[in-house]
Length: 293
Image 1 (cartoon, rainbow, N blue to C red):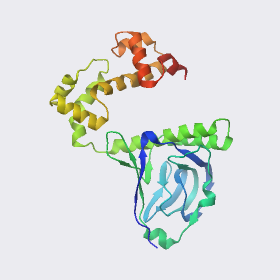
Image 2: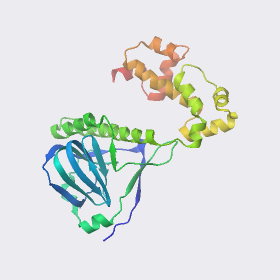
Image 3: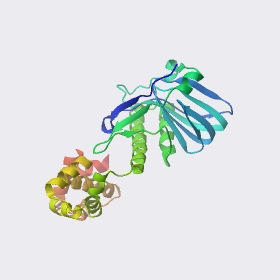
Image 4: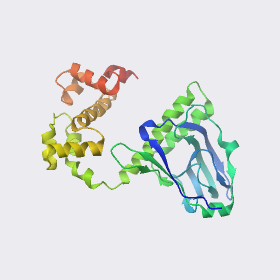
């Protein structure tokens, strides 16, 4: 039986509400085989040591330390352990109506080798504001995933009060890291390259009260065309982007222990009062509340 290749649009990244269904830190002996099978949710398989062959549909990849595989409920897959492996496995859903884990074991389906080899890998895509849809990779190597994944495993195993909401937060962070890594590999579109001088200027000098005309001039375009292009590429107006960049830097300075007066002056605000009001409009919190949380 051949399963059709399908594209699945998961939705906008801002709307994700991931639920962790199962998380483990485990070992597997050489020649152990998981599958061929189809799971009811999504799984992130991360190797700490050893080597394993992962087949997702007809695609095959040999994974070593630091490598990951990501596959979903619509595609047959198979894991074959080549040498003793220590790994982290996390089963999750991208948008779970409930925070309570639903163990996937009871809904895993076996399939034949023929089905595995004749099927094509399904692709899973996210909507990213101001950009084209982003396909999540089936195989990848991203530094820094292990600490987040181990925290998810510990929360899952210990079941301390509030562990489900903590797992959702950590899983959201993990997915954001994966998405950001993929975005850095994307070649910039011609339209995005057109506004690069303005973005660079804002990021370098967020304290400057940039006018739209000044930013448009840096890019060599008329104000109306530039404003339309900027919003299309970033999802924000130039003015709002400047405010967002200021608040992003303000968060960093606040967590670094800088005083509000210093931060306000550094970011070009005329007064602490104006800075605090702007900060609350953007985040829903005052600078003091943000720092306490």
